[in-house]
Amino acid sequence: MTRRLAVAGLAALPVLAGCDSPSPASADLLIQPIEIESVAVRVLESSPPQASAHVRGLIGDGCSSLHSVRQERSEATVVLTILRQRPADAVCTQIAKLYDETIRLDGTFPPGRYVLRVNGFETSFTSE
Image 1 (tube, one colour):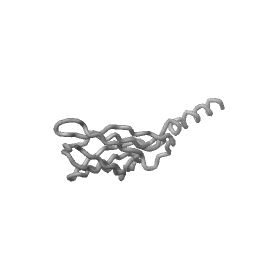
Image 2: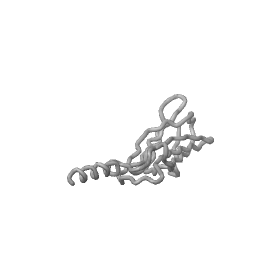
Image 3: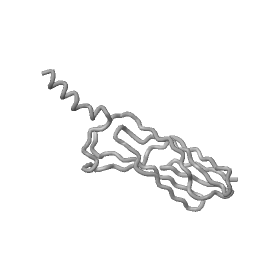
Image 4: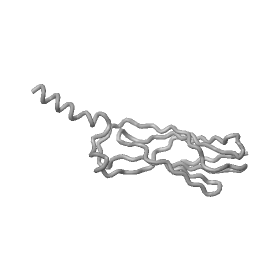
């Protein structure tokens, strides 16, 4: 009887470790934006001026992982999309995975006013 309880305890470990889900090859993945907590833009003293964004947020639970970071620019507006992935039907630990990265913004930033949107979080910055 002791052996059966020990084996049953080991079978529960994947749930406690983070995620009890089918193998990634057979799982349907949910791909969603991460939650953004703060964005700080720094214009670098370079010629021509460049900029970077320090982004902090929440990737998700124990089954979530970073999927991709995409960047688009239209004139004075830069849009960053930061996505996470997780198995669709997974049972996951509720331990938050944090995102804390500095992302170099593509292109140059001649003097002017700019807008940066990261997953719906918006901030403006000025290059002089």
